[in-house]
Image (tube, rainbow, N blue to C red):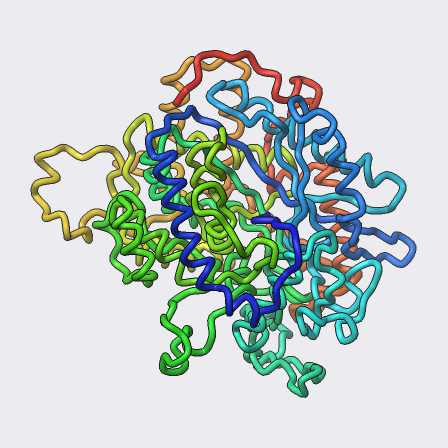
Length: 638
């Protein structure tokens, strides 16, 4: 969701004029936060975020559209938390688009109580039920979808809006401004300022899936826009999209952990970043864009391009003259550097030298200073007139302005304010959404359990950053689970000290190799695999029988996903489209196919129809089996 400041949003020229204030004061605000909280100790707390998509079905015309009802139902959804801030069971927040809405667990996050693993699914079901009650009688369904198949096609929203007449912020050929969340000016401001800072519309090019009758080369014809140009960023054999909405309109599943201290947070950030592409492949569910089958199964590349506000100079297309840095990647990407071990940072990190020196002089170590300074090569892209004047010692908006608009696969999060009860956190961000609550619960619990195994067994997943970036690229390819191999460390348990001495620390080639996801998750020969390691952790702790059964149920599901026994949602979607009687093997996903696809998905989501190809024998719990977040307070696990 990001920082939601109130006030008058500044234009891009006004924002650019004041960017130096944000850079200077923002670094001072981080320093103040750091020294206030660098010695604090906390216990494990964690929670998930699900971004739901609102779909309107018209059974008479056999058509489905994105419903722009999000802002209209948010206030009502928030009544329980506003009337009882202590005991509410869910929280609701806006997201980028009016057809999206974000739900999280309630006032009390999950923690070190193992029974919490048993109530994740119940809380997800509660949220879905609350949305269903809110939407009853409207013909609108809330579904956990990553993307919408005909996003950007004519009339894809209800009410319908013409992008040619409704695109002052986006200047998009396909995406009307009315689809952007209307309840807060942040989102339209971001859309406009990203485009204006870049000097052109974002150019999102997704390789099209070449079927038997797909034209080759595949070249689209586009209408001329208000500037007299026609999609000048479009590439042949690619599906073209042209604004922030195409990326930030995609939904995801995120998991946030509170670490026991800043050092544990940095360690988890590093180790979990290596797992990001592996789980992104397993959770892949987004393969159709603008009504066309693509050759990708996951969303990261699309979002990365949609918010790429780098100028031509920053992209290296022109010599530096007006700008200060050549920046290799968009502000949405995989991470750029590890925070707890410099030996594996084998790629040059572009960072703000002045910010780095200020942080160093302020007592921050090199690696953390470099991380914060590399965030501060970016300009603020959403700034409010009333928030320009900020205190360095008691406010954090300028730091959060930069922090919350660097959207990376992992996010390292300091306490949100100087007097906050919330500690140092890391956010795991690469997961696409699954259709059912039990699948999403399985992924959430697995990520949490991997983090516990990392800490308990001192696991070491480090590989060179260049290899981790290559893994992220591979993770998005079609059927990556079965078709790709990924760089992974050969030995993830602590090495014998004598064996470690046999290799100089600057040489890491001997430490990793390419593995299948099946090997990484399930193990093979001498490599233990993540599932066996997590099982070892589960067996090492005191967990009640029922919770253990739930966890093992989830682990079997993840194991079968990795082995290829179960399909990813993306692979199932491709199979549905390719077998539809209206599909002409030309990569086109028509309105009729889209309607039938989402009717099927709706029945699967609501438990009306099983989908054993995707979910296998996952056993869902009754939503009433546990009181949501009603858990005894045993000794918390750090």
